[in-house]
Every structure is written in C-alpha cells, then in structure tokens.
Amino acid sequence: MIEPHHPHDHPSVWSRLRHVLVPHSHDHVDHVVVGEDARALGIRAAWISLAVMGLTALGQVAIVWLSGSVALLADTVHNLGHLATTIPLIIAFKLGAKAPTARYSYGFRRAEDVVGLLIAAVIALSAGLIIWESVRALTSDRQLTHLGWVFAAGLVGFLGNELVAVYRIRAGRRIGSAALVAEGNHARADGLTSLAVVVGAVAAWFGFPQLDAIIGLLIGVVILWILVLSLRSVISRLMDGVDASVVPSLTATASQVPGVHGVASARARWSGHTLQAEVEVTVDPDLSVGVAHEICDEVRRRLPDTVVHLGEATVRVSPAGRPSA
Image (cartoon, rainbow, N blue to C red):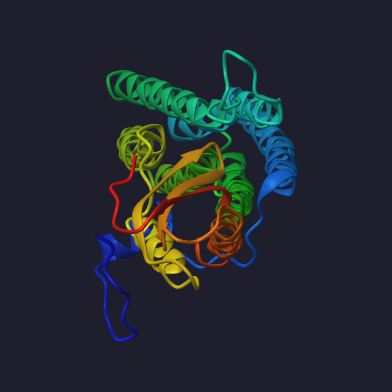
C-alpha cells in the first residue's frame, strides 16, 4: 500500500536515495503521453541516449587502456552495457506498433517488458565482471597512470550518465514504460560509479592506489543493489501488477457516472507502456440496450481522465441485482 506524502515528513537518507534511484508510479509527471505519440517519444529517447552513451563510452575505453584504472573500467563496462540493451529496447518499441495476429491476439507490446529482463541480465553480467576485475586488482600489483585523464573521464562520465538518466526516466514516466525507466536507473547507477572513479583518482594522487580497486568492488555491489530494486518494477509488469491506487480509481470513476448502480468488477494490467483496464458496471435491468451502451461509452470516456497512462478500457454492462457472468 502506498503511504501518503506529508509536507513536514523528514525521510531518511535511505528513503531519499531509494526514491531517486527507483521512481514511484505516483510521482509527478509533467505531461503524460499515450498511444503512438508515446511510442515515438520512447524511440526518440532511446536513440538520443544511445548516441550520448556511445560517445561517453568510446572516450573512456581509450583512457582505461592508458591508465589501467579498475574503477574507470567498471564505469566503462557499465556504459557499454547500455549499448547492448538500448537497441533491443528500440526494437521492442517498434514491435509494439505491429497489429495483433491470430497467434498474438493481444499484440506485441509485452516485448518491451521482456527487454526489461534483458536489461537486468546485462546489468548483472557487468556487475560480475566489475567485481572479478576488482578482486584481481587487489591481488596483483597494478600501477595507475594518466590520473589527470582518469579524473576528467570520471567527471565527463558522471555528466553524460546523469543527463541520460534524467532524460530516460522522465520520458519513461511520461509514457509509462518500466523498461525505459530501468534504463534510466542503469544510467544513474553509472553516474554514481563515475563519481567513484573521481574519488579513486584523487586517492591515487595521494598515494593510496589500492582504493581504486576497493571502489571497483563497491561499485559492483551498488550495481547489484540497483539491479534488485529495478527488477521489482519489471517483474511486477510481467505479473500484471499495477499501482495499488489504480483499481480503486477505476471503481470510483465508474461509480460516479449517471445510470451506474455499481461496479461489479474492475481490473487493470500493463501491456508494454499501455495501461489496459476492464470494468463491469451494473445498471437498471429495465434500460434499453441502446441506453446501457451509452452509459458504457460515458464510463469509457471518463476513465482516462482519472487514471494516468490508461490507453485502453473495456467496459461491460450487466443488470443490477443479477450475478455477473
């Protein structure tokens, strides 16, 4: 159950950090986009962030080769992971535009949620590689060089990652895409690792090069933590989970339509970045079929005004006082 926010509450550091890394479904959204506009925005966000992350990663690869920094290697590997996951996300957005077929009668929008699992797998692999390389660095003598370049690369990595994170998360919230928000969280985790690279370079300057490998280990652990938190949203979508406020909102809105006696059932699920709802309302059994359908149309018209990201709504009607089918 979602707890209400109070203006005088003082959340803990953990709560604030968790809120930054894993945006909630009830967070403020400047402008919600649905339908084809949402798909176009998602694809554009993916391509723009892909270009920014690609340039950032290419610059860091060269500096890793020159410096031998494990912390910078950790950051670079994670950035390269973005390149491996953004392309499938773009493909998933395009698949979602395909018309339903006899075999896939609900369409292909769930491909977007499946890509969310791929994103999680790539994050897990990159975290494993980072931890492995950090352990190797701790057990061997590795000289760090070109510390000025490492420091600069860390700052550039942070700025590039944070720019992409803000853009992806904001776009993901606007269109209701858990996969795009997960990619934004991926970029934000990279921003944190880039700052850690800066700390490692400073430590090496002052004669503590081992801190570079220790920071690499910490980065790996943080990435695993981000992975677990991000997976919750993706798995929830695959399990047809929605925010706890959605169904009560559907019920309350439908109940307020003139002619509706009650709401027999209401449910909702995500299909990609589209929220689908099914509502069954009860009406006077003496009403004509035409009037009953007019009531259904009015319910269907009002639902998107109170439920964010609702793209499709199926409204059925049954006579009041009789059990629903």
